[in-house]
Length: 190
Ligand code: ADP
Image (spheres, rainbow, N blue to C red):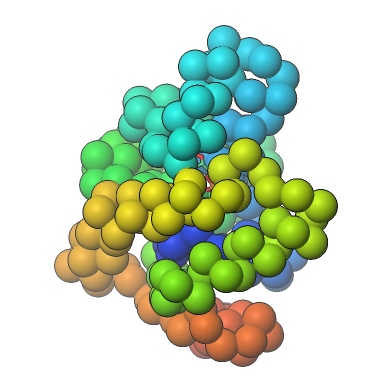
């Protein structure tokens, strides 16, 4: 099973990805996690992207496309994978289409978790508080920026994948288990 999880920050992509990983025995590939790991390890790449991430801006397409392309080649992706936080721009989606074609594999579906921006700000700030203080990219101004970036650059992917007949949309404002059930039924996997 090869999936993309699409949805604004705080929509619950990470939570649903955890479930899908176990259900299908496939890894979650989160570009956000990979970039944060690079920052923590103070690699050259990490130093390059640190400030962009702290502002809530996107990092350049070629960086994340390169990371994902390499990651998909690893053994644990043989059964499939869940892309979480990638692609985030039309350019990334096009690059992904090309690289999957080169690798001779195809996506099964793109799952959109729909959610309301204002409610999301509240949710994420609460999550940050519970975790004992905001992460660098979890304060309110940065969050609002991230939501704007989502609307401007990422939301067009809904139409992009819908036009390809690959989009499955679920209501992300329902409870966690309900969202999971909607995803399973959208994938005909329940
Ligand atoms: P979330 O907290 O919603 O799970 P992520 O962890 O996916 O957010 O992403 C955190 C930050 O990492 C983004 O705001 C952005 O700066 C950077 N980032 C992650 N994935 C991408 C991507 N595909 N393209 C560009 N920037 C990205």
